[in-house]
Image (tube, rainbow, N blue to C red; front, side, top):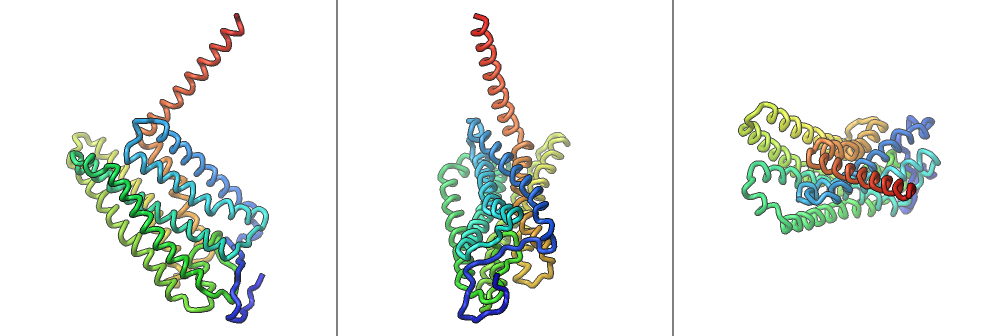
Length: 331
């Protein structure tokens, strides 16, 4: 491990991920909560994807967006957690510069795709509730294709620029990344030449996603609440709408706020302890991925009914097979 300052003609090609440095003696214990969270993410999101795919009545834009969100959650968590668990359990902490940049790209790319999906879901609900007569006209296959193209162009171009700038830097000092995964500024902070362009790119990412997506999402939900509260005949309907919208907003704000703080902590020299910064960097990815199947699955009546229908059909088939087998045995 090379930590002493070296010549500027030298640049590290291998790095060491050191997440939670003050808990190094308890690294194996850390594997338990994170492996449990990972299994919950896989189980919850996979089940929700299966239900949406299996129930034909759920093949509408809103549920397809939820299904895509679950798939993205599985991918972004898988990009980080398995490698992190190997480090906790077996001290396999080394990663090449290419591997680090690859992990960085997919982590930030998938997070930006999730941001776009949350924006699309908010707009879908806005059109469905505030412009119901024009829903089929606005939310159609053509719109979904444009959304996919917009997501790919915006996310790939911005994240490729971000990672390209980070990869062009020289790393001639420490090769220890004080994080559980290759976060952009955690790597850039180790550079021995000017970091101004990478820092500016980091700020541009926050402005492009948080500065654009959050106001539109917030406005959409406020309009939805306004329409529902004005038209609801019963107080119970109003309470349900308020509770649903507020829950969605809380989860989204956790994703955006915590992600922004951890992303900007190096840029703005915010004095956040390393372990807390590591926790926040994991929380903004893990928490939404764990809670989304509950928010958009268990709490959504149509998806809940779809799951019960699948469960009843499976139970009926099993009972039919058992009765059939019992009848053959007697004969």
